[in-house]
Length: 122
Image 1: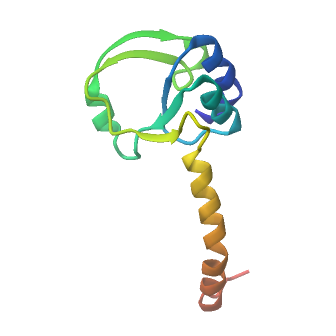
Image 2 (image 1 turned 90 degrees about the vertical axis):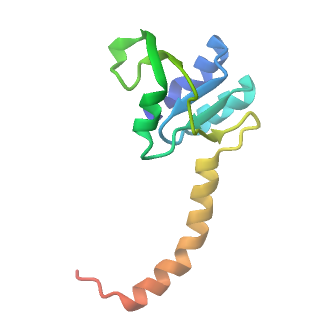
Image 3 (image 1 turned 30 degrees about the vertical axis):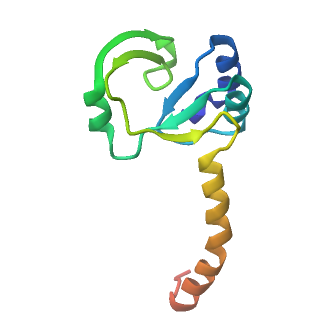
């Protein structure tokens, strides 16, 4: 969760975890942590929650429940868990940030073209 972004670099360094699975992008702290700790951050593709749930064989443990369900660390035994998309690799490449940059490059001309044919009410 992006709410945990401020802790990820330290978490990776102190725990030795090599794979974090989330549902959305993470920021520069996680990117730096992945690069320094040679870890990766992956996301489960949107709309695949049922597929993910069916791969879980057992919840073995949960740490930090006081942080709430989404921010707790869940230790699960899984089988054939995936598909996963590597969003941050061990070199510090961040797929979400790269895609945001490409989108921002391309949106200007598209918005300009749309604005000529759409009448906005103010």
